[in-house]
Image (tube, rainbow, N blue to C red; front, side, top):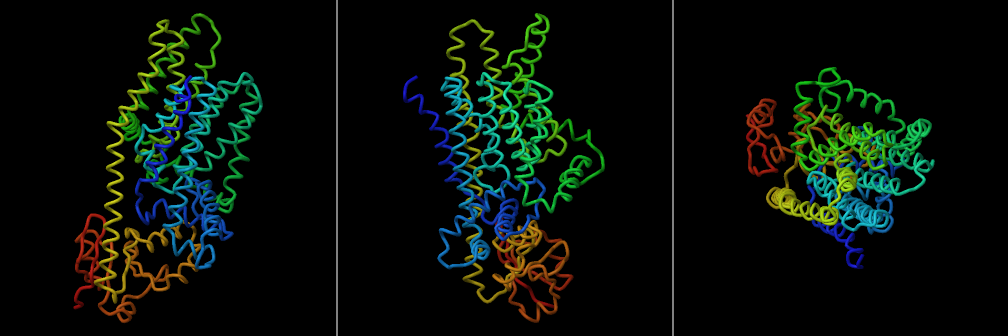
Length: 521
């Protein structure tokens, strides 16, 4: 193996890093960025978290550690930690995003390097790295959001690395495999419940019932350590996940039925259609497993490790499809099983090539697949990512434009943020604090004392969370009032006029709107 080929496993991680650093993100994206930012700040302030839906505590802990370090090294105003973050939230978000990006770049390199060392094939190493690029939805979440997905990417890659380590280890009966698989799985589940399908794999490949049971028990202490900030919310966490299981709608809503068959099977088809490479690899692997097991039983041979591991991977991916199909409305719920596509393909390829005698195919088939995969990503995925990046950029530029317009043309006006749809700092902070259990509300009121919202669901003007009567508000601010980012249709405009808030649109863009208070009757 030449030195150049050996170090080619650095190329894709560098591309991953540079692309991520140059990807725009939506400014003040309240969901999910500010949910995790504000809960991380709550941890830094010595409080428990208020958001346990994913649970997502690993994301909050990484963010809290990053915030603490950043505040220590960069605080020229000498503000307290909470105050400094709430004054500069997007600055902190950008640093946290960069930290997660660097961590994922490192793990992507380690995936390729360990594959190179253990499997002695640079082509296989590059294939495993390249398969992480097959989903634009995955890359968008990993590059641009403070959410469980960047941490899921990291944990799942560690999981894959350990699968390869297990495969190459001669002592597959060692207890260290039980402990490490349990530890990784606990971290994954604490990050997001969509990691649940990966619980299955060790149950299939661990060699004894005793080890399987200890593996399951070992998940609990790992999960507990990663969810310490959410301990006071364990009761709510239980009912949240119970409702997800027992109700047909998203987020535990809808009818109390385990599965809605009218949407379940169509959702399974949608999953495969939207993730074609994943679907093809899983389909081929499933056929191969059925044929291989039939041959082994017919010839009464012992199942080899390649087939056993592949069976575990397909069982995991199959369960992932079945799980997500129940509430399928966004592709990022599939990220853990999508990331298994590369390692699934490797074991499929290994079994196929072991049964082929042609030296030419054995020598060049892997290279052919690698080149084909790279060409597909360049042709199909890169233009999509460029489009996503452009959309974020346009949204941010329009936000800056409207903020400048308000500052320059309406400096004496009081701004009311249409909650929750306004895309700006104040709405994002309020939204994040609601999902942090209002633990930071006293700080927000102190830092931004005159910040108003219009809660469209309650039809009320709020000073943070305090209702303000319309008469008092009008008496205080007269007719110098702007409402931004809502309402978004004429019916709601008419409804607001009927409660005493006549609005005249003075700007309407793709993502931003500005209304001025009209003449009062």
